[in-house]
Length: 436
Image (cartoon, rainbow, N blue to C red):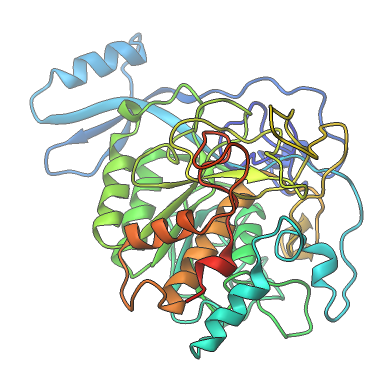
């Protein structure tokens, strides 16, 4: 694949992201690798065990024992509530395509680059901003969006630098569940890219715009420097976000296609907990081009997001299938068209999603042209959810279901009339979603 939502999940290779890390890094800024070998879906020799009265934890299998044997043994032990393989979640990003230098730093120039915000198949950002302004709000101000990812460039300390298009006030306290400390610094760039799509600053003379600018970002690191993470870690991140007031949680990560609900009980419990607290949970459908949505987006309590191109077509890597709720710009080439689709051509290049993030190393910022994927599509929906909440269009304290229904019912129908498993309810329209 290419830089494609490598973050999201184990795409096939790793993804093609800027050369910052290994996972994403592998397929970096340079030419994409010919064809990477499939990455493993589960950690070898490890089992996730939930014992009564204790949090789920990763345990190694005994010497000479296979993972299935260990699971069978543990499930038979008194006090063990669940035992499952330890699946690997990966960020969902796509491959760099095409390889141009990025936007010039010019006032008002965001429209030239952010086709995903302003254009024929954009999310109608300007209309959404206007609708929110009519009720006296500024973008997503008053809401909190948790970004569970590789961390975010949220502060300047030592080798880390805050992204120049954010200020300290744009963040609320988060946590690093990988390093187990209070500093969820981004060691990859994927999480910063995702956070930038959601809440990057405006009218500050720097770079591009965030769809829900004014919303505060809660950075939660659940993926390591190469974009991989374990179920217990991600589950703790989800619970932390819900307990600490996140209105929306963005999960630009996915598990391999063979991972089922039975393999991730702790994470599904955490997502249900978040929903019970009124938190909207948004997930990327995955980047393998499969006819099945990947977990965790496939869970019923997650708003599953597929990716589209600048021509309003399904992106060639985007997973589809039952459970897909909505699509949003992810960039890249068009998927092969099906009956009734007009204007889609896989032979034509498609622009990526551009945001300010790392280019060649920690603290070195720029506008890589290598980010495409359902990882890039999901934060559009998370940001739109924040705008719906800020607008008050579904009430002053809406339920997660009300926000999700608003986004789906106002989406722009694509593909077959009505709901379909290729585009869900259609292309996200933040303008209509916030219109009273």
